[in-house]
Amino acid sequence: MTTRHLVDPELVAILDQFPTPVYTTETLPLMRAGSKEMLTRMAAHQPTFPAIAVSERLVPGPEGSPEVRVLVYEPTNRSIPRPALLWIHGGGYIMGSPEQEDLTVKNMVSAIGCVAVSVDYRLAPETRHPGPVEDCYAALHWLYTHAGELGVDTSRIAIGGGSAGGGLAAALGLLARDRGEIPLAFQLMIQPMLDDRTCTLAEPHPYTGEFIWTREANRWGWTSLLGQEPGLPDVSPYAAAARAEHLEGLPPTFISAGALDLFLEEDLEYARRLTRAGVPTEFHLYPGAYHGFRMVADAQVTQTSTRDQLAALKRALGDPHH
Image (cartoon, rainbow, N blue to C red):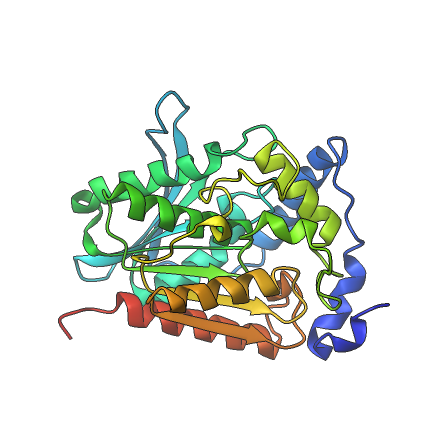
């Protein structure tokens, strides 16, 4: 059975350019190289943002670990102090870089006037949990402790990401809450990868996960991050946020998912549980959309999702004095 007839007409054509990937230890380096090459090609056609200065920094890593590379985006002409966003790229925990989200981050910085820090966390399977989330925490800690230098208002710091980046943002939200060092104003998760148990469902959703990020890819991604089969009882909530028993005390949250996305049900469930924990939660579900649909930038559903995301960020991080 195929779900192609359910795909938004504007999102169908590009699917033929993406054969279903098979992830193995042998194919992973090729896929990473391929996505890097695609990035270089796309970068040539990107709009320029003269009002945003981008710099690369190395910030102190988790204890006993290497430094973490981050890209820092600063608006050159906005008032101080300003809000900040820690952004975490996607890629199934196994691939990707902050460069791949450059346009997304610049659009957010441009629309909101915030500083953004985009994290180059270590990838699985070379680095397993807790390495990636601890790298994100290290970058968040640097942003918070260097707020003065960056002109950042520490009461308006948000975290966010898409796919695995959304999963890491959710885990980071839990970690920040539990460590109690850094107050967060908001968390933004786009099609987040939250629950390793989705790999082991006896009755998986019949209409999700056919395109781009499949059940097989998901199992490979989670196994790479956890270093064990997904779905076992002892998985940390800082690896798979859906495993957290208590969601009370988390910052206001935005979650979005596509109706054909493998992560649909885990995202819906996390949103439902957040509301049960008294966390202000905004959830968006886009019909006809598969995982990663936002790469079709001119589709109406993509433009709608971008508008929803920016509107939520603006509300969360807007100037408290106005």
